[in-house]
Length: 251
Length: 327
Image (cartoon, rainbow over the protein chains, first blue to last red):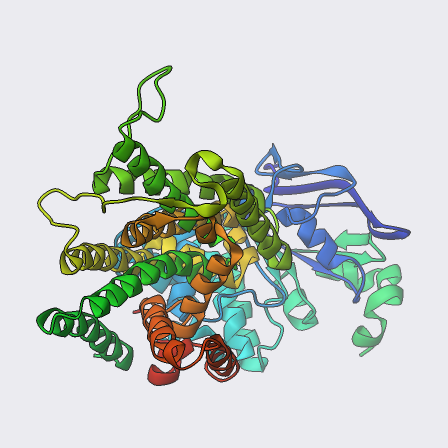
């Protein structure tokens, strides 16, 4: 079997008496979408922060592309090819849509310490930025102010910025939130293709999307992964049904 | 041409025409006022790179302004008494040549900004403001006790320093020097804002976690901006010292930091010409209202309050509307 792109091994993180991550292990293989689901407060955000480098686990180990990154910061992990989107958009709101995409292209190409030349005329940055916007369907909105975008469009732009990084793996934190039915369908189709470029760790509340897309699903409850498996395994898992899917999957 | 550019062009025109008129009607005082505007605007352009572009609320820019001033004072005082600064391990003599003084002022204030920035940029918000303020006050009290260069009384330089090929004692010629420097720095600041670095720095101001996830370190961007900002304000300090032919610890006091910030806020934070408009307005008010009442700053306070409350983009914002994202 091929090496996993991301491997989380037995990480624990506590805040006082609260165990936000309790011996969590999961991995992500090339070409797959691995969905992480769990009720609110299950510790998904804490887990993501630890994977991205915003938070250090108390114990355990995180590997990206076979390298131990447990002690590396967010910047170093981003440079290694971890492309993430945020649950709550953290785009530069004063920028145009295109400027946000150019920022991604700029960071990925290590050109931030150039003091001359108009950044918005640099074709080596504009080309990948425009391509990313086109792929998520925002090319028409390139010159709009980001603050004027709808909630759903901001999610699309989040994904576009991650695309400009040409990452080795994606970590998408609720990319469907706020996208209406049509947008959600379009993004599902897009992510379906995207997994062949780089594998995706997908945190998502939209169960239709999760079950349509995920090769594997991990269920996080009270900081613990209670099950990992294919969509069928998870649907059939009694513990998962009890803990989480109960209400939503009853029908 | 956008409204802001038209407004800026009008501003430049006024800055050229007023001294020209003063020169023709032999009003040297007006020329001196214009020189002061240009120099203080320059200090503000420096601060605006940290404050407007980087979102770094520095209340310690007087440190750089003062270091620039003391660079001039120290070099020139040694030149006028013909005593070397130091003889061992190598000989350093004073100088009255402006280009050398400017270079020393820029390097010294950039170095100070590097040290102060490296320490204070580890904090943010109110703590950053307080630490920059503390560093400024530290230098202020150091200057007060530094009797070799005048201590509390300051230090006079008898003759203005020299610039090759220019008679710097002629007010209009010294004004021209200041204008050329201000113009060059404005061009530099405009290009910096449009550059890849400018985009990244501006993004770090708005959302530093985004900047990290694209693989850039906000601290490095901010520190670089702080050094550039300090260096420009330091250069302004050297010119200011030459305008007055006098340096004193006042240049380092936190009042000076506050004044520089007032220029930026009056004109418009983050606007290229904000500090120019702000400094011009400040000097104009000081000149006009200062004649009416010693308490003219009360009016300034009211104006500042109105601008902060109702025109977030400063005077430029009030006149030309919201800033358009650069193309």
